[in-house]
Image (cartoon, rainbow, N blue to C red; front, side, top):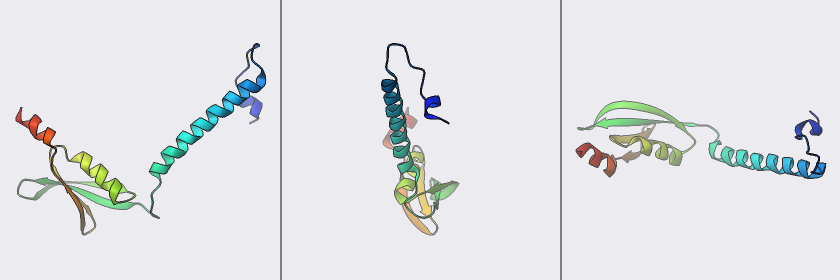
Length: 113
């Protein structure tokens, strides 16, 4: 593809260089946004790590399991915390318990209504 094919047609009142400059600026802006998003998706380790988020019933029995694949413990904790709106969630990586999340106070208030 030639550069001239990527450039929108110019209006008779604007010089061609201004249109090309604006197009290049827009492309660079989109590239910066893509790179910023990519930074948050690339794992910090060589591979993804498998985690299990267990939904706990009263009496410490397991009611269900949600498998998570994350880059690190911090990301897994953020995702598991989002699950803890009404139930207790325990986050495990293999035999290691990473965290335990209690239901939020807002969830308790909503259930009382």
